[in-house]
Amino acid sequence: MIVAEAKSSRTLGDRPPREAKKKVEAADTFQADQLIFATTETAWESRSLSAIHNAVHQHSWASGEPPALRIITALGLNTCQDQRMDYQDGQLSPW
Image (cartoon, rainbow, N blue to C red; front, side, top):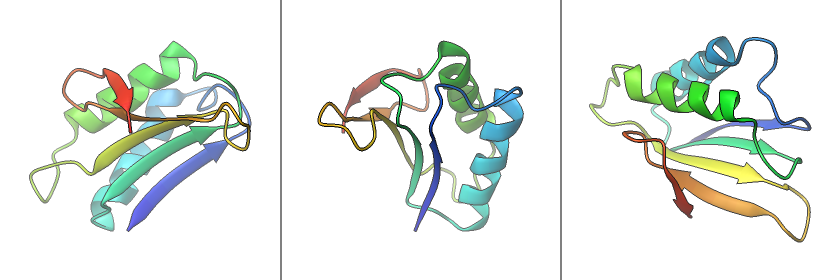
């Protein structure tokens, strides 16, 4: 099971923490294996990345562990980047 948010902007909107929390809660409810945040832009804004990390890190997961967290940028372009976010420190590494 995958829960995903796909955007055509660099941000999760006016309230990134709220938007990230909604996706985290959905991922927990559905016991998702992966939680994906994707954008057609070449990068996510740092505020949105921080909100994603904080929402995942601070959530009390029913299974004890969060799903794999993927951050995708430049979706649909030849330069698409698919990265894993470490839920403990927020660092990105290649998927």
